[in-house]
Image (cartoon, rainbow, N blue to C red):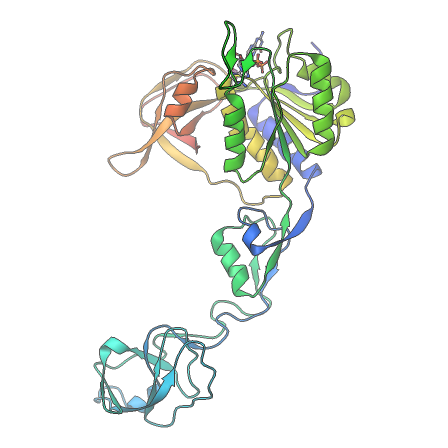
Length: 411
Ligand SMILES: Nc1nc2c(c(=O)[nH]1)N[C@H]1C(S)=C(S)[C@@H](COP(=O)(O)OP(=O)(O)OC[C@H]3O[C@@H](n4cnc5c(N)ncnc54)[C@H](O)[C@@H]3O)O[C@H]1N2
Ligand code: MOO
């Protein structure tokens, strides 16, 4: 069948299309308080305005001294006279004279004239004299002004994901808010006349709706705040109406089910007629019927239609869906790549890229092992629940030996 869009494309081609569509629909930036930015993508570089540390300060509790006062190396150091104290936060204008030292605590600014700190535990105080157990090296236990950064240094770059450490770095510059890319709003639909919500009685031919909770959980785990719509019956008019509403109100509309070749699979025809299909069917297993479209007459949203089989939902979200929302937010850092050795052999007989379910374990030598679950059908939710990673097997038939190196995607 001739189509006006790419179909049965290789997985790599699908990721390239996802990246370019996401770049075309990049979300705008917004200013948010530091307490609200964790996991978001930074929209603008963070440039230092303060040196860090902002002043020379003590790294340990003890005594601040002027190293040359200890006399030449090799000679026993004279006792130093204790002339006061400097605690963290003090702003007195204390100054050391020759042969003097000052009690100091971690984080306190060094008094003028001091350049070295000795720890309390290796000093002895008798009256107003301090005796050192050993000779310190010059500059010891001092955190120098500007050793971490200077004004003008680029501390964070647009496209980086805000981890707690990066947020702390911004806070250390006195910045109360950051420019981050707005997270996409996402509407989640399940479709199918056979679906019943958990808690209701089940008749013959029906199954419980398990995909909604799976998808909602996957999205929340990625920091999104998705909105679930009631299940859609296999009725083209109702599907169109609901998707049109969502397509005008959300950035991304995610559906699952109704995207394959059956008489009740209405989504491909709807999106072809009303939107612009970017691809339909990717050579991946599970998940082949996945479809990506721009909404067109259905609204400004991007429509990612996942196949209905529960394991297909898992695989297509983790590989293509997550990539789409990363791209919409301009995430520049790739997700980490994990490699593992297969804990048992696997005979792959088809041409699609495979995402097997498996469990990660530590091998005897400490390396990562991935044990494929033999129940590989895309309806086998129990196998997915027993697993904690997708095991990626490249295109083409191949017999994988135990110990073969494979990519894994933990979930
Ligand atoms: N002639 C063809 N048949 C099928 C093809 C094909 O290319 N040609 N593709 C197969 C593949 S691969 C998959 S995957 C499925 C996907 O089909 P749909 O996306 O249209 O999904 P449905 O038919 O609606 O459902 C498939 C399966 O999953 C169950 N399901 C759906 N939604 C839920 C839910 N929310 N919770 C639990 N289970 C759900 C549904 O009952 C079906 O059993 O098509 C193959 N067929
Ligand atoms: O590609 Mo389907 O998701 O295998 O069952």
